[in-house]
Amino acid sequence: MAKKLLLDKVHVPGIRSYEVYRKEGGYRSVEKAFRLTPAEIVEEVKLSGLRGRGGAGFPTGMKWSFLAKPEGVPRYLVCNADESEPGTFKDRYLMEFIPHLLIEGMIVSSFALGSNVSYIYIRGEYAWITDILESAIAEAKQNGWLGKNILGTGFDCELYVQRGAGAYICGEETALIESLEGKRGNPRIKPPFPAVKGLWDCPTVVNNVETLAAVVPIINEGGEAYSKIGVGKSTGTKLISACGNINKPGIYEIDMTISVEDFIFSDEYCGGIPNGKKLKACIPGGSSVPILPANLLLTTAKGEKRMMNYEGLSDGGFATGSMMGSGGFIVLDEDQCVVRNTMTLARFYHHESCGQCSPCREGTGWMERILKKIESGKGEMKDIDLLWDIQRKIEGNTICPLGDAAAWPVAAAIRHFRDEFEWHVLNPDKCLTENFGLRHYADPIHVTVTA
Amino acid sequence: MIQFSEEKLNKVSEIIHRYPEGKQKSALLPILHLAQDEFGGWLETPVMDYVATLLNIEPIEVYEVASFYSMYNLKPVGKYLFEVCQTGPCMINGSDDIIGYIKTKLNIGVGETTADGLFTLKTVECLGACGYAPMMQLGKTYREHLTKEKVDAIVAECRSKAN
Image (cartoon, rainbow over all chains, first blue to last red; front, side, top):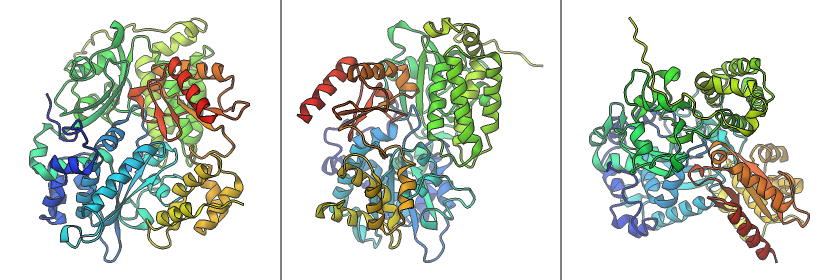
């Protein structure tokens, strides 16, 4: 059984309430943090090797150390709870079932960063979780963990929940800030980065829910102890939300030392594929990361077992690898159509493009329309090349990474499943009633020996 | 006359105080949610204008926000809004069948409202419930692991609540 740092107490009855949470050792990290200086807390987080859990995987301690501290200007901590990446539903679980863990992490982090007013920006659809968080914040405040002069330290901190209103783009930190300012979620041009000019032009740190929750065990156990869990630069534990064609969809906390194969097939995690079907493909880190066929998912191009961590999932780059991303793990069995799946994702990005940059605004629509055309048996061979060409023209040509996020799934689908696209073109009638199936996608990889 | 109740006005003032002085525009999204809940489930222009006066901002600042976010309805919707997710993970688990079933059962297309004004069907993109697919949002909550039988039960539940 892997060590759990975030979800070890999630099944304790009543853990959502302050009393039970506190009795189980909750809020100890705040007491400990107040015995340290803010700079010492930042050092602990740096030492832990914690990487942002929202998707980009940027080292959290480093992000914190970039925060500008001009005299007399307020600084803000904003929690990114705008979880919207298809396949990702881990932050929701954490906030719904153990809300005080996030609040505890935010108090420690607010103290470390010098934020006297911090915000949780939650996606609008998580309306009932907003209520859960607001009651938990009220409990924390009643018990002296928030408000003025917390525990007699002289540190003041208020925490508020802000509901979004349905926009994937607000998960991008500058769009989130715009939205929190009461505007459309149009990402800003960087630089300046939020660390210098963020919320209301003040220095701001935006961190994911899971990242801020991880600050609690880091302070409790120490950054060094945390860094010893996991492997290489994949330290600590990671929440994986697993879905698609698996026996046990849900949230798993892994210590990043297991293989992808174990994660899918062992009973401790996903429990294999239902109905005796075979694994065809997987999107291992949320819809934006490259889809991999079964063979490349389980084994790297070098013929080694692929591991469930940042380095393992990205082994081989985009040519033969993928990314850890947000930990949204989507499994496709042999009956799934990669063209159709890619079409739904293209439709998603088209719907969610904010419209600021032409390559993304127009390109995502083109990709959706061409994929619909191919999927419905009306495609031509040249459409596949056109699709490739469009995604190339979106990637890297937009203000924010939504353009890349829209391009990558299409590129990877063509890269690894081109024959499935061609089959749709060559079999316009059959593709409406049948699926391409598993074919060779689970066959062993032949490692090319190079001189 | 579009006017929040005393209680709602207190809520508005409480929300505005979450932000520094002069930054009351930050309250726009939460107050639009309040307004939509209060004034019939959608945001007609006079409602948006009222919100603008509450926050001391220009009406256009409200319109441009209301038209950006998918949760704000800019035209009337039924008493019960079925927002069914259709993105990848839900599609893999049969959301197309669920959408088709609701269409037949209620005899409406996507984006349409039943003649009695009770139900509107909308397809939406990923709501973060991929492990519990297929699913839909109904009001403040999610209805997950949908089957045809569950849809029947939800429709019956709404009908009985409306009576």
